[in-house]
Amino acid sequence: MSVPTKLEKAELRQLDADFRSTIKQENWTKLQFNPESLKVTFTNQIQTPSGSGDQSGSPSRQFVGAGTTKLALTVYFDASAPPAPGESPVDDVRKLTQKVAYFITPQEEGKVFIPPAVRFLWGSFQFDGIMDSLEENLDFFSSEGKPLRATMTLSLSQQRITKFTFANSGASGLGGPGGLGSASPGTTPLAQATAGATVQGLAAQVGAGADWQSIATANGIENPRQLAPGQLINLNI
View 1 (cartoon, one colour):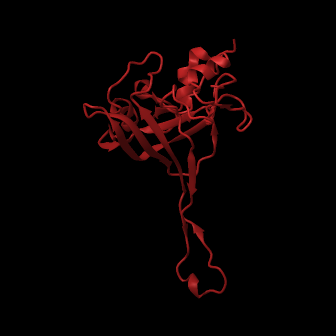
View 2 (cartoon, helix red, strand yellow; view 1 turned 45 degrees about the horizontal axis):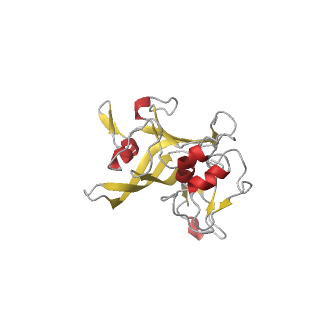
View 3 (cartoon, rainbow, N blue to C red; view 1 turned 60 degrees about the vertical axis):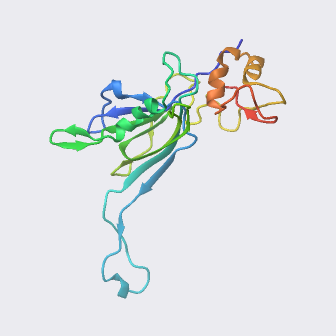
């Protein structure tokens, strides 16, 4: 029987004020579901010198700042999803999202309050910065009025143009931002669900029946017993 590939999870780690070393491991958190995409934006500060409008041709421009690098992403949390191994189930999704909100909460540093430096790490992708914005949407409330699902849109930035950082993703077979193993995007065949098919049944066909919950989570499937006919599913998790 083939061994299912481990799914690499995106993670937030706290850094020291100099963005050099990770600190306070008790505040690190792995995201429940990996984001679908990452958006990196580079911005330079450009200024047109005054008085250049009287000159013929295009006015010259000057670089007046160090520039900014931003990372934007959207992540999802679901308290009704099966908990990860070693974790206890929760009845309020905010018990999961509060670990992310920690990184935008100013902490006392000497006589000032500043948000902690944070490292976003996902496979070989690494970005160090400060969380400058965080938006949380809560929905799917329980009968007790507790939110069970949340969508968080967050932005990290550094006040300089940073080079791409390629983190060591560990042993071969661990996924990077694609999160689906070592295969190149577009080369892994997807299984097509037939009428009445279930995630458990499809996983059992490829020898991954014991790991069907991970397959459902990675594919964003809420009800593994009700698949739409023709639905494409990646079983190589």
